[in-house]
Length: 157
Image (cartoon, rainbow, N blue to C red):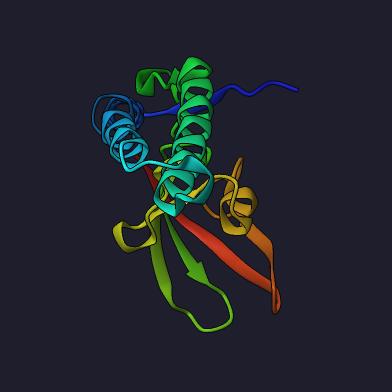
């Protein structure tokens, strides 16, 4: 199974900045905490030392995970995307058939999703249900409380 994920340039840069912060700021801070705790004496009964070592382990795991994500990330070439179908980075205007409410979402990679900004993941139930649809098509989307039906009104970038 491939770990390749697609990101916008902005989204990938955000990941790289987060990774850099962990390596250049958080890692030295934890090392300093460990050194200070070690200077306090007996390590067998030193809760500060144990906590700092645990925090270091968790941080190193996060760094390794983020390094893997960045290594397998690919930037999406927006000029090559087709506006006739819903794809990643499509801005989609949809209408809930049941209540007539219109919504507008931009489909993005999972790590870039931000519902308040109108960005939903292509891995979410709604994102998956909209992928590949064209204007005028209906999308039946399974949600926890049943099935919702949406009409695709508009697709843009």
